[in-house]
Image 1 (cartoon, each protein chain N blue to C red):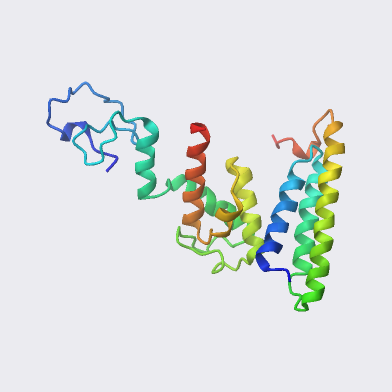
Image 2 (image 1 turned 45 degrees about the vertical axis):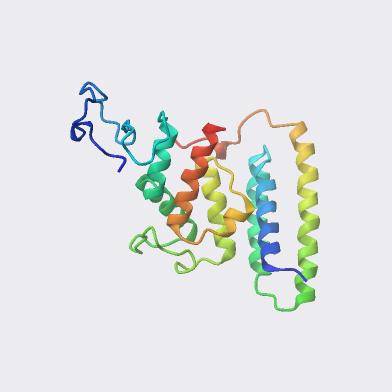
Length: 87
Length: 136
């Protein structure tokens, strides 16, 4: 039985984890993907389906955190052009 | 409250005292009922928080909310506007809180984040956190 606050909490953790990436592309991707994923499944009524996608979300959170460690070991040397402020 | 001018205090207070107008920090003398002893700037700021969050903060929060929810320029955003009234669901609220965290460089706790429902609350929380950070 997954409660709404747990879902919101999972969303927040995913967003927070995604923010830590040094790579601009991955940061933006994780943010957009989590929001899309949660919105797509936002209207589910069947509790077993909700549990299913919640479990998927949890797995993805683990993946994000694990991969983050790898990426932190090799940060990009130059800033991505999208991150430079428009002058 | 926080804007007592030294001229109104006709005590033996030397009139040389802070003629520079820092609208936030006026050194209140010990006649005030809240007597903390020596006043430091952080205590004065706390006085101000109990009144309201700074208008610039509220304005910045409103801008972020407007951007996140893609509101048109003519929707009126007051400090008391509830996010749900503006058409935000809980995910939108999460996004807004994240955007605020990034913008103000603060970290909002889980419990605090659940309780934010209006712009005013968000601004107050931000000020609270921004205050605690340098004090830490």
